[in-house]
Structure formats: structure tokens, C-alpha cells
Image (cartoon, rainbow over all chains, first blue to last red; front, side, top):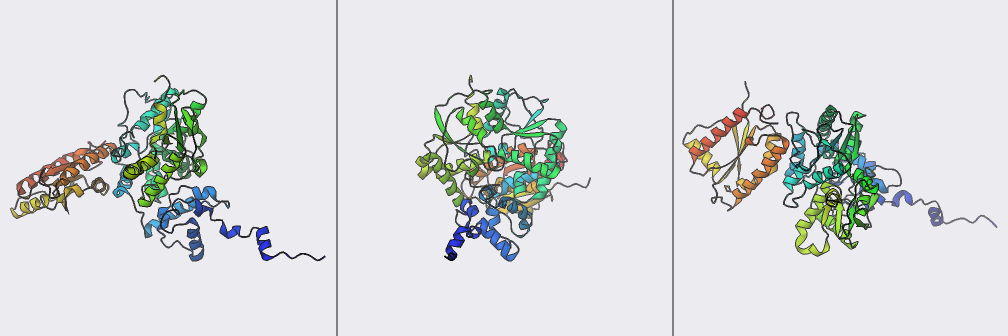
Length: 382
Length: 138
Ligand code: FES
């Protein structure tokens, strides 16, 4: 009996050598790779390894930095952070294709000028308990600007900050607001516009520190990720805590500090990437929906949630809309009566997809709403 | 006191721009502080374009089109009115005084009116001061 020589195929299978090259999970999960065009995280890396540079790859602007590739990678590649970090030099070769005639990039930039003093608290109504001496500050973000630009899509965007305050009030928190709040800079950071981000971050940190608050609360997942994760990358310890209003509300619903009425409806939840993959806030929003009746999950949810299709107001087009409609169909297929999200931008994107396509596809999609607004409308005793 | 207001004037091709021409031909004096940008219709001036002017250092922006009912694309000036209204809201959020934005109608035969509207606006911006440096922006 001699040693049985394994065939080449057997050895390859035994030592799983093909895993080295045929993984491709990043590209499989990438929302941009699903669209027309040839973007693929894997190919970007292959080109880089081969040519040693990125040669002004336009595809790098199409990446939505949603982090799905990083989530799925078994080799620990943080591809979306790689994309972000090469964008400042990419900007010099080729610029991103912005949406809405660049209006949000302009607003962001103007908002960073020291001589401009934004006033975004136009949504405050008399029933909201705001306390100028509070140790908790609510950071509002760009929703008031979205309200102006997207009112034709939905006229209830300002209900989001209002609902957040109502829910915080239920928890005994009467937040204060910044007199002059600037854009958080999230988009500038992810688009490689480091100078604008730097100005915005510094101005906001300075303004928040000047109030002496212990904590900042945000309802926008991008403001949350910016304040919580990005600002400390530049200035280290902020001197205040950053919390997600959505997470706080979820915990309060779970511990019954906030009592919600059963709406009699079953909803499905779309995880915003900045809240789920980037910040690991996955369970808390689900507690809110469970507290209001039923929650049913879409196949792509939690840490492998599908992206809403557009990020940082760049690269929106027919294929992005198709991606969004596909997500709405996925929501409908769960049997849920509505799709709920926790991000003002996801909300705008899905509302746009519905609005633009309501003609032929009305029956296929589901109504979309914001989780804070929904919860606030269901506070027991209201 | 060497500051001079920088003002952008979007003029529609068919009325306001022709009005500016007439003002020139008739030797009406108007302020040299405006930079005229000819557009086919006032309705073409989208909110981002207006905001871009302030971003790039303008102290004031004028949008000048045909009188209501006279737009050569039927209702472009009505569109301009809506757009200017939303820019006013955005300016409010950014803390920029919305008196820095003017929408007016000037016909091709109104050279005098063009000069008057322009001079009045330049004077207004002169009073408001430079964007950001003026007391009116909060
Ligand atoms: S052509 Fe003059 S406003 Fe439309």
C-alpha cells in the first residue's frame, strides 16, 4: 500500500485555495455593482494592485460608502474607508456628479463660512418643551433644508425634529438647541472635501462646547455618525457624549418609560447604513416598532440591510431609482403595511422613488414613514 | 471704506437683457457694481445657481425677467417666482438677509426701469453692507 496521491482538484478543494480569488462577496453585496456600469470593489482593488494607482476611476464616486462590502468581507478589508481616504486626491482629477444642481454641497459650504450664522430652528412649535439651560442638546442637522427642497415630495419633514422633541419630553428630557447650528459635515467628509469638513466640525464642536452641555442627541443617523465617530478622529475627546435619539427612544419603549399605542399595523424597517452597519444601532429601532404593533423583517435587514440607493447627494439616476423601487417591492413582499426608516435622507430617497414612479408602480410599493414621527403619533394618552 | 458691493444680475434674454441694452443705448447711467448674466429665461435660474453666487462672494443677487404674462416661454417667470421663494427660505435658514435677493420684471422697452431697479438694489446692498459683515445677517 503506497501513499494515495491526491488529484490536483482534490488538493485544491481540501485546502480551499480557490477562496483566495473567487470570494467576491464585496462585489456581490455592493449596491452599485448591481447597477449598469462596471463598478466593482474587487476590480478597483485589482486595478490598484496591478497599476499601482487609481487612475481617476469615476466608479469611486459611485460608491455610496454604505459599508456592505466591509460587512461581508471575511479578510477584514475596510473598502468603504479606503474609498473615502482616496477621494481627496481623486477630487483633483475628477469630480463627483452632484444631484439637485449641487444645492446641498453649496449649502454645506456656505454653512461652513464663519461669517454666516445659520438659523435652523424654524420648526419649533409651542407645544415642544425646550429648555435653554438643559444639559442635553438636540443637534438638528439638515432636515430643515430638505424640507424646503423636497416639500413637493412630502410636506412632513419638519415633523421629524418635532416628534423627536416630543419623545424626548416623554422621557423627561427637555433639550436645548444651538442658536447657530452648522451642517455636521458628514457628506463633505465622505466625499473627500476635508477642508469643508474641518471647518464645520471645528465650528460645531466649539459652539457645542460653549454651551457646556454633557450630551448631544441626534435623530439623523449621519449627524450621529459624524459627531460620534468622525469628530473624535480629528479632535480626540469631545468633552460631551453623543447619543442617538432613535436608540434612546427604543430603549425607553423597551423599558416602558415611553408607552406607545398599538397601531394595529405591521411595519417593516429599513436600516439606514449609518445607524446599522456604521453604528451598530440595530435592535433599538425595532423595539419602537414592536412597541407599536408588529414588525416584520425584509430579507435584507440589520447589518446586511440594503442601502437606500444614494449617498451624499451624488450619482442619482434611473438605476438608483430602480434600486429604490426594488427595495420598496421587497418591503411590500413582507406583507407589511408600511416601510419605516430612521434617516431623513432614506425617507427622501424612497419618497422620491415613489413620487417619480407612482404612475405605473403604485400598487407595487408601500408608504414610507419616519420612525420618530410614527412613534410620536402613537404616544399613549395623546 | 473701499468695499464695493458685488452683485450678480440674472437677466432673461428677451426682456430684462434687452432692457439693460436699451438703458445703455439711451445712455442711462446705472451702477457698475452689477455683473449681468444672460439666461434664456428667468425660469432657468435654479435655487442652486442663486446660492452659488453668495457662496462665491456676491453680496446681492437680482433675477430679472419679463412681466407676468410676457414670458417668452409662457410661464418661466412664474417658475422663477417659486424658485426665488424657496431660495428666500434657504437664505433664512442660513441666516442671510433675504433683502439680498431681488426678483423684478423689466421689459425690453424699459431701459429707465432697468436703471432704476438696478440702482435701487445697489443702494440697498450698500446699506446692508458686505455679506456676513453687515448687521442684517444673523
Ligand atoms: S423669457 Fe423672460 S422671463 Fe421667461
